[in-house]
Image 1 (cartoon, one colour):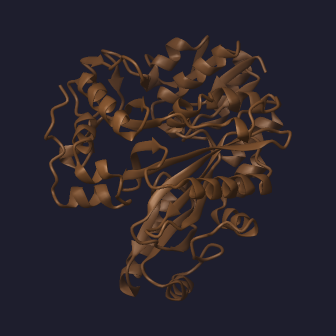
Image 2: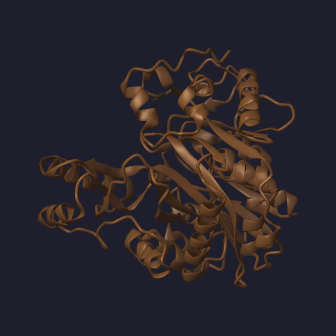
Amino acid sequence: MKKVLIANRGEIAVRIIRACHDLGLQTVAVYSQADAEALHVLHADEAICIGEAPSPKSYLRVPNILSACEITGADAVHPGYGFLSENANFASICESCGLTFIGPSSSTIALLGDKSQAKAIARKVKCPVIPGTEGIVETLEEALEEAKKIGYPVFIKASAGGGGKGIRVAFDEEDFKRKYAQAKTEAEVSFNNPDVYLEKMIVNPRHVEVQLLADKHGNYIHLGERDCTIQRRRQKLIEETPSPMITPAMRKKMGDAAVAIAKEAKYHTVGTVEFLVDENKNFYFMEVNTRIQVEHTVTEEVTGVDLVVEQIKAAKGEKLKVRQKDITVDGCAMEFRINAENPSNNFAPSPGKLEYYIPPGGPHVRVDSACYTGYNIPPNYDSMIAKLIVKGKDREETIARAKRALKEFHIGNIHTTIAFHQVMLQNDTFLSGVYNLDFIDKLIESGHDFQLVKST
């Protein structure tokens, strides 16, 4: 591996470019016409335009990405997250073209990307699984029968889903009939696959995930958990490690379960196993993310392990040098997603030019971003401006430093989620660490004011 093409954009493309340069690898950025002045284009050794602004005409256009590899002589592809990162067909094409795909094998992506097969693997290694259908439900009649067996409330989920899309919750039979059609339609639009399956709704759950690291030589470790419970409509906003509600005994059980799933799937790179944890601290397998996660940063901060570098090394066939006994968690870290959204208007997108962009600094503060003063946030992609990552010796110190860092973060003249995070850091429920996945959505429904603290 000598030259890596990054098939992505934004902060993750910048992050991957930096990791490649740390390893002495050449980099190729690809960009749409809307991203001609993006930071990842400036940081890479080479850059090539792959199409128009809409993702299907650029970042999702496989022939254009392969042509960029051929033109530049890239011998490896890093997909980042989103876009083609969990597309088994894309990984397979890369393999057949002699390109190193920096991620799992195409067969592993296909295996774990199929929710029913992934759950079967979890059952096989005796990991608790949420009750639900073992495969897709073909018809409304079949779905209604299965929902009755599972018991309401029940989730209707896209089989090829991710990112909180293609999900509906039904509370009774009449509600189910409406939501079933809605879920299938959204699944078709979002993933070009209308298949759905059913899953029991765990009441008042938390979302906790375990970070995995493996190589092609049979070595597997986990790097603890991340709590991703602070979400709006299943879109993550704040992540932290360690989770304020996970005990050491639970951490070991969840970590062992995640590693067992990875071994059974013959997984050999960075990945994440996601769990729901109920009010009684029982955990249930949800899915495996076969890619680097947005929130990988907090794990890096408390373990000292560079996950993107390790991901690249695993793709090169190198042996994992760190072992489970070497992994220690030092302190607490939180990540705050700074998005171009208006929290006071139901988090409506707020694209536009950044008239000024002044990120915070100082000890124990990290900002991962692809933005700068004068940069124009395009309306074509996700709304992320930056990720603010803060570390402390414990949760209390981390929150104190986060308050300082958010106060220093100045962005104008567009709406951002900075004020939302400032409000959260004054919220008694958040500070207590005792909340569930519906916490933010219920605050929004109640008309909660997320502009109590100004961002500038």
